[in-house]
Amino acid sequence: MMSRIRVLEQENEELAKANASGRTARLQGEIALNRCLVSDLKQANAGSSVYVRPM
Image (tube, rainbow, N blue to C red; front, top):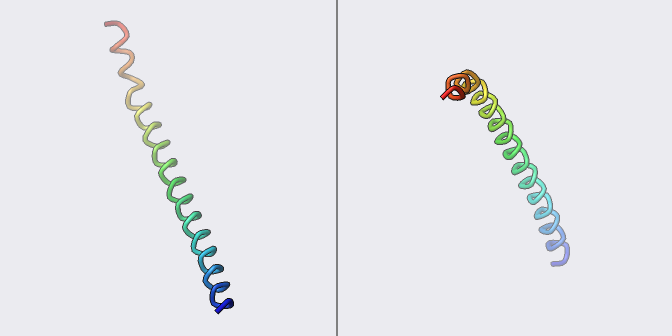
């Protein structure tokens, strides 16, 4: 029974590592996507500040 517990603990640790790395990869992807969005918005709004400031 103790050997089965050790095996289950090891599997649990492996699953936790896989879950953490998956979460990290997902968050890194979201960060990259948000950076692209911010860059696109800055470019799209760059010309509009010329029209807004004189008002």
